[in-house]
Image (cartoon, rainbow over all chains, first blue to last red; front, side, top):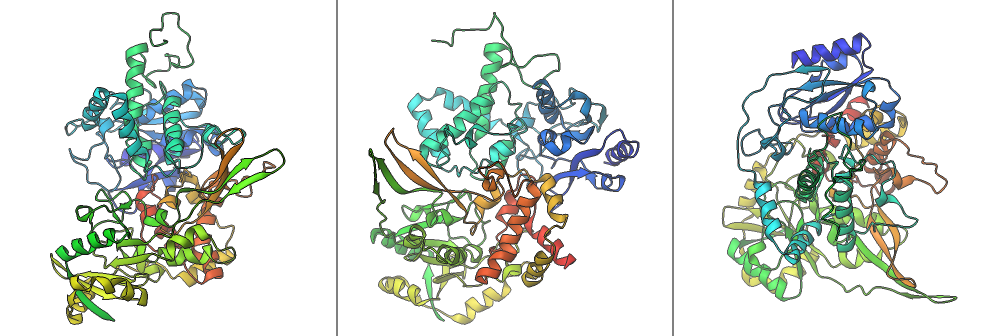
Length: 288
Length: 340
């Protein structure tokens, strides 16, 4: 933690960056929250631990930071995937961001939990980017991760085995709780559209009502818009007050992208985006 | 106040009877996500120790989405049909003090100028069976907004857990008395001394701020930077407003059913959304998240107080527990209190 504070202080003092987006301790020690450090004094408050769940890449596309100059960001491996994807999608200029990469030893799935094998986030279980793929400075050391069964994957296999009707019933049950707060969208680093299709009213493509039709159209369209783009940080699922298992949709889409196009989002600055690429060799057998 | 005793078994029989008598009994979901309609004794969760659910029960009186008219477009005129609004006999079972007050508080705004019949039809016939609260974490601040874990305010009947198997049932209002009348067979005589002793042992959450002081500060510090500091990290997701037991903003939209007919819907909305105040001209009076956050605080701790003499907050802490970026409303208001 001291090396993080020292680094942030150094960057802010010598003018390398204008702000550092990082984490500070929140209401209880087992919670952190995002923080924008603007001065060396601010940098003294920064922390990094197993409760740093937020994907701070979310803040990079904010207008007020775009104008600031170089922005420093404290980022775990998965957060860096989001940054890479944002760079690839021309939303963030790669020279305008300074990544303080953190070697990551897993985070909790929800704020307010003790870190243990039970509570480690699903995305951490099979993480391949515990050391970020891209960084300007790398801090921290790797330790062994606690292990547990990937229940999310088991559930996904169960869903795959279901008939279309059964799957519909499953999602109808889940979406019924949706209150249309759009917290999933707001918490997503890749949902950066200035005007979301859900907010368009002339014509209204997606009904804003939280009834079955409105909830299905919103959640499924969001999943489609993230196909081949979602980097799997699961912030949508964490933000959802109704605890809808949105990661099942996004993870499935990610697996399809991998299987059909051998593509994983956010893995490198040299790989063009999936949706933005036309490739003659692409599999076409899904077009019927 | 009259006090009776009801055993856990009798509570199940009582709820079963209520359901048979066409009451709609609403209880907290066992997963602590939201509240749902209880279909039988197996669904009953009356637990003074559990955490407040992620989402409050307001959706049963103030629906998250509902049609307010149906329309059919004829050549030169419209046919308008009002939706049928059957009077529901709602019973909220196991509401903690921070939930129990919600209907009373919202009722002020829904009956101030226009009388909102959609709210009233449900709220007026509803019965709140409260329960003393034995849960407490760092996000609870009911004592700061004039409530407490043991207050019967807002409840018609109030349960106090005596031991593993028995509750004291306090009859708080006339309505509560009338409501419980047909079910006397499940009640036995109570001993006020015992429930008093149990209630006195429940610890209050720390009082974090003085609402009158906060309200006065807000009057004079409209442009203070504290709001922009929160706005810096707030992502405007609206989780806070949707989980809140007393946030009551809604949007009205028309939904087409086909080319000539449709329905007008009343849907939840939240002041944390940029679209909430966006004018047709493109101008947005609350264009930054900081200004939107200021609205949230000022509405809860000043405007509502000025207008209805009521704090628009019950101190349940749902907004803070659920905030994806860890904004703690009590912390913000306590900071305001220290500035005042």
